[in-house]
Image 1 (spheres, rainbow, N blue to C red):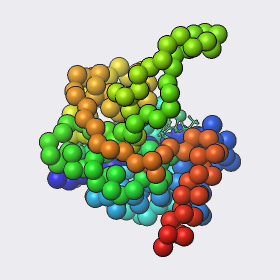
Image 2: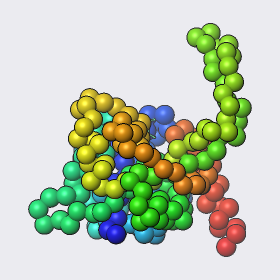
Image 3: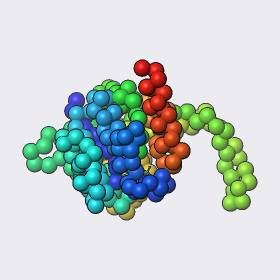
Image 4: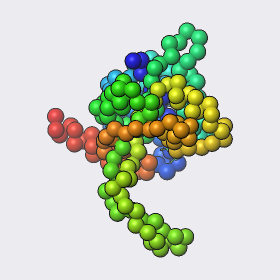
Length: 229
Ligand code: CTP
Ligand code: MG
């Protein structure tokens, strides 16, 4: 099974508010995107394409090994992944059997989490996402912020990346999706095409860096690892 990964790294990181695109923000001296790519390769992915902000190609090339291909992303994550998918095929390329789509914003995703997604695909899943339980009480509020209902949380899950797909299935689902559609993840794209999406256990260490506090936590996670060694 030939596995490729697309790393979505073309966002600006407006909520993080750093002086550069989020994927280039350093964590223990290395850009987030470099951590994310390393985790994918260590987990068993053979080939990685990174979607980058067009104006930042040089900075991304400097941050990553020369074997990693860069493609220009788009104005939305959906558009960026589309561009990454297109780059996986073409003259002289062997199309991968399966594709993992990952956020550069999840730098410390452990290789084991990547390997679980690949194992589910190898076992025949067309689409699979890593998930974690919801531990907080979860409620619905009205426009005034007043609680109107409690949501039973037992069947709820938080969805992470990398999300894994049979490549042909993902390509067909993106082709069927309206050009202007903007979905927050790739499982939503294949579900919109009627494909069932399976789950494997996610990992808290694969948390997404969205706001400055998340970056601080990732730094602590690394410090913790150093102490353990
Ligand atoms: N992403 C992308 N192309 C876009 C927007 C987002 O490739 N046009 C990527 C981001 O680089 C990130 C991942 O999708 O790795 C998840 O998105 P998010 O965490 O929302 O990152 P940003 O969009 O960069 O952050 P913000 O929404 O705070 O601006
Ligand atoms: Mg965003």
